[in-house]
Amino acid sequence: MKERTRKFRPIFLMLPCVVFLLGIIVYPFAYNIYLSFFYYPFHMPWTRHFIGGGNYVQLFTDPYFLGSLKTSGILTGLSLTVETFLGLIIALLLNMEFKGRGVARMFFIIPLASIPIVNGYLFKLLLFPGASPITLLLMKIGLVNNSAFSWQAQTWSAIAAIVMADAWKWTPFMALIILAGLQAIPQAPYELANIDGASAWRVFWRITLPRLKFPLTIAMLIRAMDLLRVFDEVFSLTEGGPGSATETAAFYIYRRGFKTFMFGFASAASLIVWGIIFITCFLIIKKVFAEI
Amino acid sequence: MKKLDAWVIGKFILLALLLFVFVFPLYWLVMTTFKPGVDVIEFPPRFVPSRLFFENYPRAWTEYSTSFLYRNTAIASLVGIALGLLIGIPAAYSAARFRYKGRDDFMFFILTTRFLPPITAAVPLYIVFKSVGMLNNVFALGILYAAMNLPIITWVLRAYFREIPIELEQSYMLDGHSRLKAFFKIVFPLSWPGIAAVTMLSVCFSWGEFLFALLFTFNIHAKTLPVKVAEMQGDIGILWGQITVIGTIALIPIMVFFVIIQRHIVRGLSFGALK
Picture 1 (cartoon, helix red, strand yellow):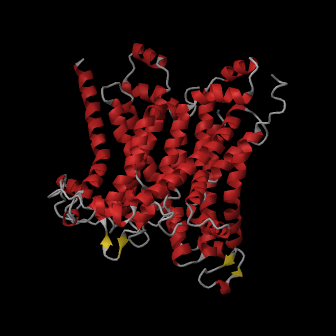
Picture 2: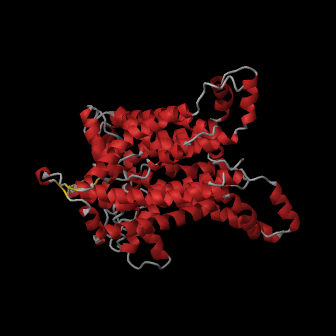
Picture 3: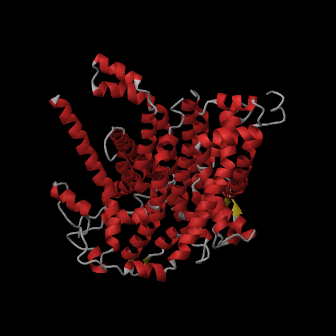
């Protein structure tokens, strides 16, 4: 067998992918690094000049940028928590044997198929002041006292709206991955626990959860990567408002890059975002993937 | 025994409740398409249309040339998935089966391409695509979608390939078959769940992609469904009827696709947990 595979280099299978991605990403990336050192308003290109680290200095003193990073962080943390918690519950429920399980699973998957931008509009409609079934429900249980309650008027409720929209679409993703992890757990430890008369709660903490560590981490990693860059739902649901309260990092870049056309500035901002995601993922991967 | 029954019933009540929470927005989306305009924003909210109003559908179909939007979205997504699988499967296989210098760095590099906010990559890519005359081109969009999908494809499939016992290939190759043949005869047929899962995720990402489609397409030759949706928030307010119609008909092909492959999906997403 050694002879047969002598000419075969596994790296040749990897290279097309790496080269393709390099081709797509290298120019944008280099361009951003280059531009991030320039003062460059796109509508006045003749004023473009090199300013060294000026954009970066300005960014780190811009409360709006720091605020957008904080908003992205809060949004990512909240959405991840909600999605992981609900996804875990749904996965555990769908892991039971019952008639109609396939149909239930199907219904849970459908939100994944929705277009993110439509998703934002759908929740805008579902939360529309005065015409919102969700506000109506909250009124019935006494949490809100005004049918015209505006979700976009306060920071907390605008963030809650985005979390709702994101969780509706992505909890099913979380649930699917956790469900796959659950179905891969062998029966033997459960049978043993049954003999010992362990409580369901204890079985969950001692047997189920530890075995879900890997699928949970990878699902959260994928979600965190995308949440830290979230744009579509913000664009269609709150447009960053009220004020700049729900302005995420990606939305900030959009506003500075495409509304005020400060390209150099936007480039610097996006490199910082890239760096933050890079460090986060690098640490997680080093820690978790070292074990496999 | 009685306590156990209460526990089981409780679980099913919770399941029903969660199903309701997740199906309700979907119901609201589809139901709004059948509402006459005055019903949409009304207090108290209308849970059923005052009368069934069908005009939104033919209007959206003809006024917005929805068939073209559909075609463009489908081509871009298909190119994104096909190209992504074509390049991604060998990479995933290579990373799952072999040890070589730089393997893990390559895999991490592939992942890092998903870190950059798409909005930033958009401007330089716009310049590149313009210079090679590929703006307003669905295939160009497809190429970008392939790049977006590759991190997920390679990472999920690598975990999946690892679950397939290497002995199967080795014994097949000992019979005198080449590695290529071993891959197509042994590994590939066993990988359907994994491929189904990454295809599903790729579809989710490409079908609804908004930013690149918004910036790189100008007219009906290349515009996609999400772009059209964003155009419906105009000076006269948001065209809820039209948005929900496009949202609904955009869901249908994906849902059909999910129904077909859903048996495999769960198995395919196990991320090496079976090992």
